[in-house]
Length: 64
Image 1 (cartoon, rainbow, N blue to C red):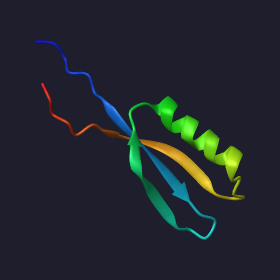
Image 2 (cartoon, helix red, strand yellow):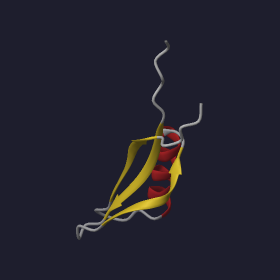
Image 3 (tube, helix red, strand yellow):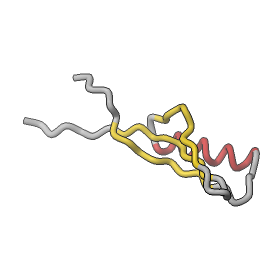
Image 4 (cartoon, rainbow, N blue to C red):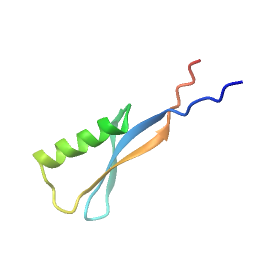
C-alpha cells in the first residue's frame, strides 16, 4: 500500500498594524505562487507595518 502524498492549498493572510487580520479569498496551488503575489503587492503598494504571510492548509479535495 503506497502512502498518500499530502497536498497543500496556500492562503495569503494580511495583518494590519492595528491588529486586524484578513485571509484573501483566492487560494494558491503552490507556495511559490503565493510568495510571488506577496512580492508583487509589496512592489505596488508598499504599506508600512503590514504583514503578509503565506499559510498552508491541507487540500480538502478527496479525488482518487
